[in-house]
Amino acid sequence: MSRKTSLERDTKETQIALELNIDGRGKYDIDTGIGFFNHMLEGFARHGFFDLLLRIQGDTEVDAHHTVEDTGIALGEAFAKAWGDKEGIARFGFFILPMDDALVLASLDLSGRPYFSFDAELTAPTLGTMETETVREFFQGFVNGARINLHLRQLAGGNTHHIVEAMFKAFAKALDMATKKDDRIEGVLSTKGALM
Image (cartoon, rainbow, N blue to C red; front, side, top):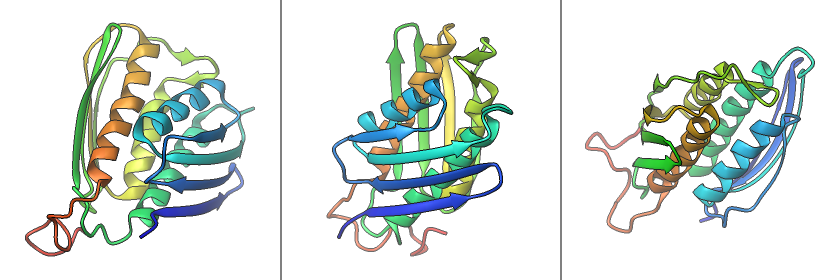
């Protein structure tokens, strides 16, 4: 069964169009209007083996906030749409990813109940034209859109670029693990028979 989807989100602040294949090869074509954000999402797609086509027109003349947050929401909604009823998938995923001085843990549950915990010290105020405070907003948006439980922890590191990049890649690896099909699982991996 194909786990591909497309989605459009249109507000006064952002216009987003995306195509997603969970069972991809890590191919991407991404234009958010924010160079550093493009770089992070390209790493996310490549290391999660998600095929992602993403086009965004956002009010970046204000700042990066709306574009980054709304992308998180839209991407989360797209994943939830693509994985459907979650039958036969592993549900849980985790990864500890090193990137030079940085070490980041991502642990998640496709529980159907949104919860987000974020523990990191991002000392640089911006990365390119993207405010580092919007990193948290991206992941919070994804959690809300996909209705997942996500914990992100910075375990080591001082270079903000490395820390943020490790977050996106660790999240991708954990999400890839959680969305994998497992032939041993009948229905959904829950004693209550539903993930909601």
